[in-house]
Length: 168
Image 1 (cartoon, rainbow, N blue to C red):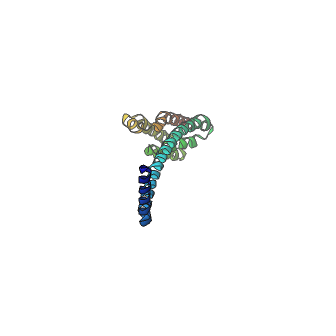
Image 2 (tube, helix red, strand yellow):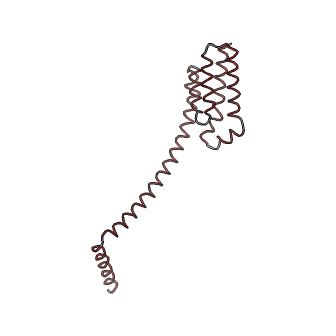
Image 3 (cartoon, rainbow, N blue to C red):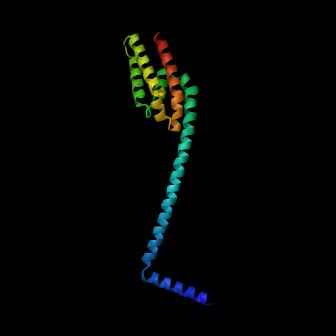
């Protein structure tokens, strides 16, 4: 019985404190709820970002495979070349820029030997960029870039070969 009376007395005192100054307890509760909500949101955002990266990586691989084997073979070779270049624009901006210049040279009225020289220059830059150990080390740390290191150079080389055949 005394436990019940003590508990009632404690509840009564808590009620008196709340009646005298309700903001203190309310602020404590609001702050506690806010901290829990922030923590929950941060967990949700982290989980969402991880899932988004997984989906993006898988979709990139599927997209790239479809692009290489479905769309590009039937596409104008210069358009296909530009599409492939756009895939490496973030990781290899110099390859992208030189590739665009190569398309301009290829479409210009300069003589064939200069066009072939430009194609060979681009090939050397591409081989250095995709095959050099330092480049591979810096890019291959990200798993989503591994497919670019493996497939794009071959696809670009095939298109360069076709462009070269057109010049002959």
